[in-house]
Length: 477
Ligand SMILES: Cc1cc2nc3c(=O)[nH]c(=O)nc-3n(C[C@H](O)[C@H](O)[C@H](O)COP(=O)(O)OP(=O)(O)OC[C@H]3O[C@@H](n4cnc5c(N)ncnc54)[C@H](O)[C@@H]3O)c2cc1C
Image (cartoon, rainbow, N blue to C red; front, side, top):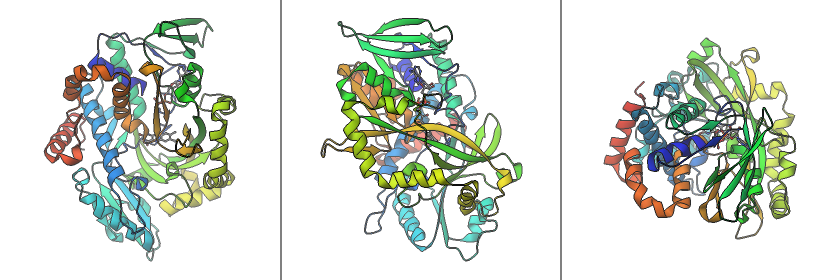
């Protein structure tokens, strides 16, 4: 998120002085690191949680359309960076990988037909294929269909427009590019405090994690792009807008295989359906990953619990984040989110054999010995006070918190995450710098031709954007 914002500022206000502080020894070691997330370029091509069915069985495509439009914004901005000379081949961070949704059972089939009908009518989802035919599925998904009960009812959609994204590599390229433009990127520098001075500027206290030296930096604007570390820093800034917000950390674990035989049988990302009562981020998926030139498969996520807000965080992160102003929200959520609590307990109690059983729903012939468990990043789910009821609610999306009359902002939450970082940071520019937007709009529209437009309503612009980004990002295969 911080790298994206630095890149956007490079487009609209290249004369601004920007400094990035990173607490770790290197950038992109937390959620954006390639093994810490699933690398799905979320465009709602396969994630069933973006296409809920109503009581009449009809599927509402609106959320999927919005996510897809946001991903097109990311593609355009990445293309702009590549065209403007960001070093490295686009292949090092984005690769075409078909996205499929896969479902079993008669109810599942009925839902998938309704979903396909709703999406196929949308220009953004043109080319989405549907099948209930096991032979066709065996062509699309050899690994998943081998050894499957022939009597099982199956259905799937497939989009060739899907991608696998190495968000770690992308972060690194964007920050290298920013550094070349004169943006200092300081590693091993932990932001410890953010405090407002009497003249309205912010005093940021930074500690060198190697030498323990402290220094302060005065600035007109602060973006707290600290991932899981954003909540405590926004609390320290003391802005009233953070009152009522809390965080609930859930860690993700994945089974991973690098077996060439298994990888060659699964050249896709396949999303299934979350178990009843399970939260959206628990949707099981089997992903082809392309990281630093190596191919592997990842299956998960299996949820874990740790009170840390970052992988490299502290066991006290969660308890120390509880304040009088968010205690009510936290208790409210603990009371109402019984299904989530049950889901987490169930996940934590799972044995290796249970986990293998879950994998076997996707890969019937999976052998335990081929798969290793890897621990991915921490997701700090947002807890906030519902203004209507005053009660705490758990939210699975992201939330931009803006305070100090637009002089400080921070991003909480994790979904749809890195894929829509450009839209999230454009939202930040619009909220924090509304007076400058008229002057910035032409530069933004040059970098992101669909900026200010809805691609779902402008097929000609969509066709142009699609063709252009496909060529620049080398997504033709
Ligand atoms: C299991 C899992 C799967 C996911 N799958 C996907 C996916 O398939 N597709 C997708 O688009 N998104 C996915 N996401 C979400 C995505 O990874 C995140 O939304 C995104 O990486 C967040 O980026 P960020 O810059 O906000 O945070 P991060 O990448 O976590 O970066 C925050 C940085 O701030 C640093 N920091 C923290 N505190 C301080 C401090 N006090 N001082 C200085 N530096 C600090 C950290 O060290 C870190 O480098 C997934 C997330 C998880 C956990």
